[in-house]
Image (cartoon, rainbow, N blue to C red):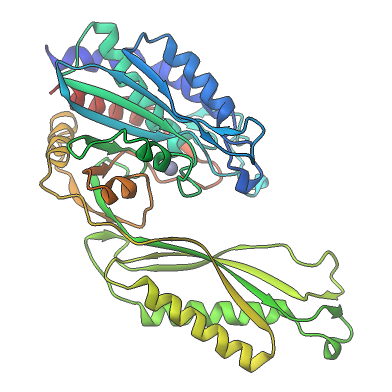
Length: 408
Ligand SMILES: [Zn+2]
């Protein structure tokens, strides 16, 4: 079989790919943590599309979740058998999207009303993770259209709950025993603009909320209360400085080379400008190099909180929302890394670099069970931003790489 045929078949499918991506973007799939209804509606749409492909097998592994009205978080797995049935390449993408954020910043499209402009599809979830979802789907579709049997079995997984920790998504699938250590796993949920970066390791992750409690009072009489907002901000800024100064190692293998400690979400406090808040809630997102110990960092966070409690009389509570210690990297010489490097070289004529990122993607859960997983795609890194977009040419070109991995 000549790969050129597959390439041109994928190119012919370009407008269909674009249409499918737009259809998927129109269905919000937001986690209950962010007041969403989960992925059920989007999964139904995807199933309709998948059924038209006549794949060898389609399976559903829903995880129960009382917080959404469908009471389930859907996970879909499809198989297209290869000549070699015992070898499987997995392409894992996620159905869920993050909320739009500040809607007024969406100047080029409404978040869930996708538009095409200058070869890009704009909309929430276009890049993260719609582009790769569609690319993986159409890589298989192109092979089916041509009657080409892949060399190895191609398994596609479309999972829930990636943005909130994957309990109802990839972790649920791993618990079902779906994966083997000799599987070849691609998680196209990260990458760079020319597709020259293959990620084999992620940083550790730590999310926490700082709950500062003071005493609410009238804004004209601060002496009668304790302003939790001011103390919360002061503590957050001091913490920000301390963490950056103390945990400042750099590792050039990573893109970014340093650990990140970012104050992010700020929860609403009082309703009126003339009330001194009695409570302040600030979140931090930290992505930490594996060489730093998370427990040491947590100790310092608590120590500084005690210090500020002593200084101010407020109560400062640290609530850990998510903590993941970076698992061992995927071996840079493992089969999937070598295959992917070769595919990128053959199709794009470039030599990719292997390294680490801030994470965290589904790949970390595979590394925990010692299944070799790589993160790769070709993206401008607009995920989670207003005016998120996917370049149509990248969808086509990434689909070719996936088809190459399946057939060579
Ligand atoms: Zn993603």
